[in-house]
Amino acid sequence: MHFKQNFNIFIKVGAEWRKIAKIRKMKKSILFLTILELAWISVWAETRVYKETVGKKVIFHNCLIEPTPEGYFFKLTKMSDQLEDEAEFELDSSFSTLKWTYRNPKKKTAVTAYREGNIIFLSGAYEEKNVNKKFKINDLPWKQILSIDLEKFVAAGEKDATFWAIGVEGPSAMKITELSAKVKDEETISVNEKEEEAIRIRISMTGIMSVLWHGDYWFRKSDYRFVRYEGDSGPGTPRSIIELIQEEQAQLPQRRP
Image (tube, rainbow, N blue to C red):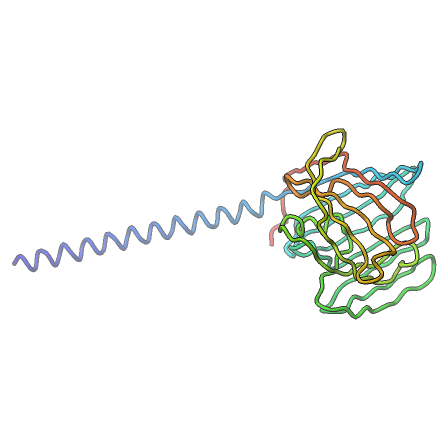
């Protein structure tokens, strides 16, 4: 008799535990779906403005960064008293370039490049001349917009890296070059009239070509954001200084998958 009562109690307790487990599972599912829903509804878009000084000329770099399912979308528009040039980039989650479009109306240039495996295809027009090139590369990343592409490199605490980039000015225009990035030191610099701790990265060509050109990039230590550049835009181009003067982040509705 006691055995039967105990067995019935055991069955009832087991049933109650199964109910509790089912409720917990439902709550977890609801919580997961809620988090997923919020992740799609509430995403950030970031805008930045940089000021470039080349001699007496001042150019403003207007930047827009938005997340995408593949990584990020980045748009750069350079303005002086007129449109200088504009570019759009499709980046992966590590900020490496997947696709790049570039337009410079003054130089009658409009090109598009994209990567498939270890080949970068480049086509369009450069200074009115047709461009149709295929660059065979290796597994190294393609980093076409160094100021943004290197932010995750700095955030990861890496000390050096090698990557590919296509030139847009000077002797390297419409040619692909292997570049290296190396951490030089940490410095206190002035950014938009404010003292900031920053990490300095030097970019140069690889091998013996490194003596031909280099540029220094500074990334804010607190959030690894690109804040300053000093150097040439590339080999054979005039020296420039670029500084961050405005930044803003906003939440925007995201298109659902």
